[in-house]
Image (cartoon, rainbow, N blue to C red; front, top):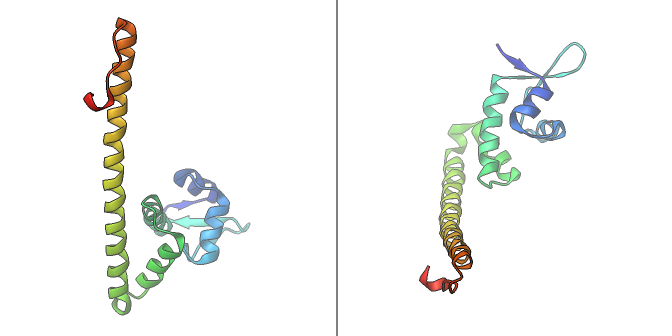
Length: 134
């Protein structure tokens, strides 16, 4: 069984060691072992949990909701409806964020074309392009 130090986990997930300790304190990371000298020992189970936490965080789910998800998951049969509701809502919220970002990306691409047009016009000593014509 592979084990990991807090330094290795911190580097792998690009979080401060204090964040990992906080996750342990609030119950997001459970059953963290200790070495003979008191150093935290993380396992593949912690890697899997951190993968999930990172995914949720990267898609904007608040820590309180991530914690609720894992509390629900500790007794799936009793909490299946809550789990489904939480992940479906988050799926819909994430889809809305993606749609908004796609719209913003189109706007940015328009700006890129517009300013390239201005650069070309400057170089050729021509009139600048009209925003609506780019």
